[in-house]
Image (tube, rainbow, N blue to C red):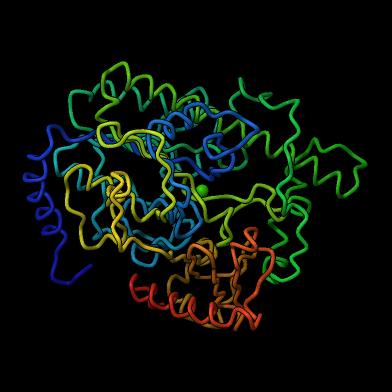
Length: 492
Ligand SMILES: [Ca+2]
């Protein structure tokens, strides 16, 4: 935070900026921020999936804007949530890895203003329902009803305004019940709700009514399913991300006597069907909320942002999980509907990042973005008036699971001899991606770096970092990476 600005000045200064902005609009929009966990765009029919129709996600795309190049900035649950709240990168907000439980050493920087606090200060009624997954209690919400940690799919405990309570039912349905109940009580006010689902986080447990949804369907393998990792040495070492090695113990009903390939294929089919079905429960429940907004006459004046905290490998490279800067893990869905501002059916290919959500929500509410936020409002893109200086490259960081850093903290990151070991063996890295190329710097691995030509090699199978014909590109991206580190004040 700039030293000249105190937290109070930031909040009150922002509130003072509301009046002139509001006078230009008849009514401030309501804001529904919908986030799922590990949801991959390519499994949604509005992003081209052929396996399962997702009618309510599709509806948002048809009636709003679909972003085709939306990326997370650190592909992990808790860091992404902290980034959404604060509008800044992990190294600024303090949540580098998955931070849960009271003993977590990673604490969010509470001096940073968050979007719910600023909206609340500006007179919005605010609520947070569903998966929170940060170690601190929700701040800036008039009402919260959250799952503790990862939460359970069936008969979960929720913490409602600080009180633990057990509920019967399925988490996605219950989260929506709480959301609708609060919305109905607050429909006469300007409101903002974070409606965040546990689904489709692993282990995927679909609602009972969806358990057989894709029973007779054969899910196609991704083209990289049998990758040999010929030019990516760290990917090759990440054996704990592989279906055939790491997931076997999870499936007690795995038939006996299968060959290694048959075993991998069996797990893949089960894994994907459960994933799709868990995500379908979100689509179905989103439909309940969309119907409610229609019936209550609020649809026109409500901004809906749909996204996920991070991407996921769904058999890509024979893997599950996320973390790496490779495309399946980096890409997130982003759909924004706001009938009061934009007509439907828009597709936007400019880069959008999860640091942009808070500035976007504040901007649409007529609130000035605090200087601490590193993202940029997507409003001009929604209006079809893209600024000439919109970003053409994006910066990514990955640090590691914080549970391995507990008791060591940020000091460990500064110690070059510190060894990182996690179940997935993904070494810390940072990288830059532009429209055509991606450079990944595994800065704990000596001089090991990866460069991909996404136009010729969209699946990132051929690391061309050492290829002399890419020397100019390599140097350009190296400079761009440093420029972005400076821009985002990442001096670690
Ligand atoms: Ca996640």
